[in-house]
Image (cartoon, rainbow, N blue to C red; front, side):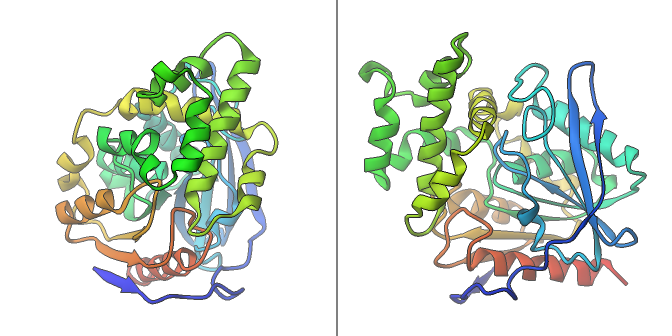
Length: 326
C-alpha cells in the first residue's frame, strides 16, 4: 500500500478535457436506452468509466484523470441516470441488468477488451462486471470503494451522524420522528410514492445531505451545484432503490468472487477521510486482493475531482497504462 503526500491541485493535475469522438443512444431493453460518449484517441487503449450513484450520471470532468492521448475513453449514463431514458426509472433496474448493458455497449462499439475504471458505486459495478466477464477486462482502476454491504449502507444513512450531526439532523427532520431510526426506508417510501412533489422534496433533502458529506472542507458551492436541474431525483430514486435491495448482490459476493479477476492489474485509490464510502471497505478489498496496489490518500474526502485525489487517480491510471500499453 502506498500513501500520498499532500498535493496542491493545479492545471497539471488533470488532463485537458478531450473532444467527443462519438456519441449515441443504445437501446438495451424494450424500456431503457443508454446515452454514451467516446473521447480521446480512437486508436488508444479502450477504457470504460463507470459513474457513481447509482443514478448520478457521468460528467466529462470525471474522465480527466485518464490520458486522452493514450486512451479511447467510453462513458455512459446507467439506467435511469443522466441522459439515458426513461429518467429516474426503477423498472428493470438491477446490477445484473447494468452488467449486461455494459456487455451490449462493448459489443456495439466493437471493443474486445477494456480497462474498467469506477468510483463509489462505480467501483461496485466494476467489480460485479469484472467478475461476470473477466475475459473482457484488461484491468481495474477503482476508488471510493463501495461493496454494497449492510455496514456501508447503514453508515451512510445512520452512522454518518457521528461526523455530520448538524446536516444529519436536517436530513432526518424531513421524516417523522418514529421513522428516523431507518432513514433508508423512510426516504425510499417517499421517493417511490405517487406524489411527484413529495419525491422531488425528498430528493432535494437527500442530495443536499450527500453534498455536505463529500468534500474534505465544507463547500456550499458544491452543494448548490448538486441541487441544480432534475438530476437530484434520478440519483435519489436509484440510490435508495439499490441500497434497499443491497445492490441485488448476495452478502459478500464481490469479495467471494475475486479469484475471477485476481490476476488482472488493479489499482485501488482511497481517501483516508472518505465519509461517504469509509476506508474500511477499501481496506477489506485490498486485504482480500493483495495483488492490487492500494494508494491511501491523505487530506481528502470522497470527491475524486478535488486535490489530492485527482492527482493520485491520474498517477494510478498512468501506472496501469504503462503496464498495458507496449
